[in-house]
Length: 112
Length: 116
Image 1 (cartoon, rainbow over the protein chains, first blue to last red):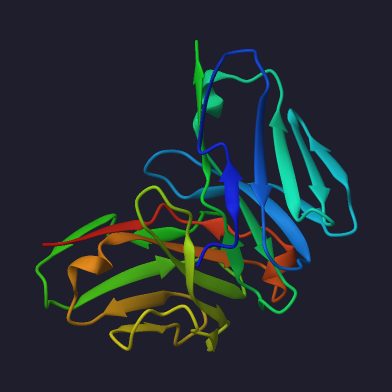
Image 2: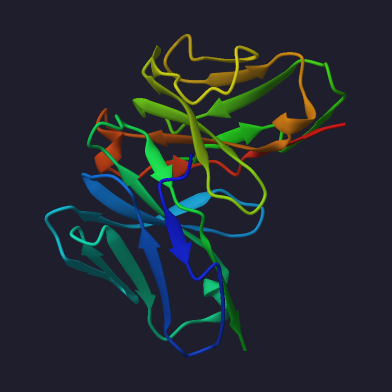
């Protein structure tokens, strides 16, 4: 079963705009990861944030984590057409063993 | 080196046939995972290997699903007596550590299985 949900399910923006995706989860976690999936391809790891961290940056990506609300957000700044993909959050640890539990994903479309 | 390789990329089978899906993880990676991804959904965990040991198979949907990794490298996911509901993309992922929940997983491009 899915751990949680991403919001929105789909997002369409213009190139250069920022994109924000949210993820909610249900159980206690050790860390939360974000992955990207281009159509017909596998998932690519973007960033990992640990449960004791509140914010993390990597290039144009900014991730926040609020464990009290069991939620995370992914911000992509200055989006590009190449950012068009599906984005998934995934949680791991805390009784779940080594597996990752994925959310339902946000489909991002960046238009020129 | 090379990434995670899966074969075949596409598989079409008739209902009732057996299929075998192969995963070549990144060389030296200890952990190997199989996930099932339905259209428009996130991946769902099937099973996990640490080297050759299958430590978690809680996600396998029925006893028709079987996975092995006999030498701790290549893995095969076998589905017996396939049903239409088995149609999905099957993703394999590997990780360099035995604490894979705290490190990135590297995914292959998956096998798209269609059962007619």
